[in-house]
Length: 403
Image (tube, rainbow, N blue to C red; front, side):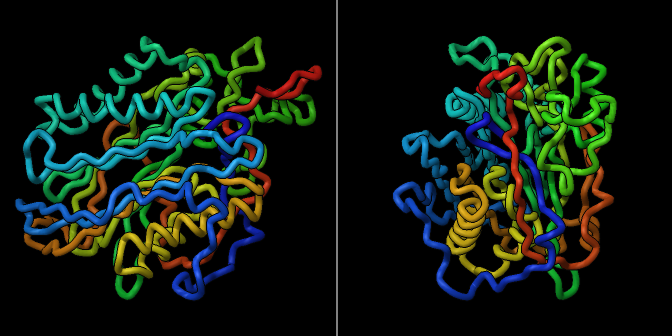
């Protein structure tokens, strides 16, 4: 997500479906500004003694390349906290993707406050879902009353809490978590989060009830009939997505329906209530990825899993995914978004701790997430997106200049 000079929001065009690639062949794409590539954390190993397995993880962060703003700060941030509340079986991974003029400040504020609240909540390990809800909402309230101007700035939050052999995935916004599942001889990607945008019927109806006008930029500018309240899906119509506007104004123009911050958009339904998914791990779960939409804007979940599966070392996997994302951004935009990716490998988990090792074990809490459209067979197609639009935009109606 982001302001007009940062993030975009459409997905994978059918015109590019069908391309495939062996991601281990050849030299990785040369990042144009290698000084901005930072392996923020070297490979770390975390034991989960209660179920006799361990996690191996690595983080890579790449500041975006903006030719017109070469010194623009990285608005992404991340947080990894092990042994939460002194429990050796509880670990936290989170990525926060800021947007707007003060996006960096918002993402860093939320990164620090959210984990602090979770660590200090005595109910966390007994009721992680309720603790998540409380932490997200109180962090949002604190951001509103902080010195940071979050009227038109905010952040996504995609977080994974590991407790024993169970994942609790809480999401606000359009960053993403995905897990790799072995099914026969295939490795499939299963999304652990669902992007929160007006493309979703449930989110569209919710923000409409809160007073939002939902229109694309073309509709606001009179190029398309504003009474047509159907935009297809994000894959085919992401070039001019539906956005949220106040009733009598040309703002805020957000293409997301949930975030932390964004106090102006909050008045028309944008909120910080997380969608929480619960997943019991089994030996078929190989690794999970937590990343900002700098990765997923041009790469599908399956492509990211395919790439990560090609490497035994998480550092190589992170580097390859970031390099491919950077390459596609430069090919289509001549700039890049900030890219942050955490790859967490699941090592040595046996059947002993899983009640249903043959199933995905997914459950949802809070708002329901629909996984009916997950792939039922392997899809190694390399897909990308063109004709991208920013997530926050003000139309140029009456010669107004976009913010």
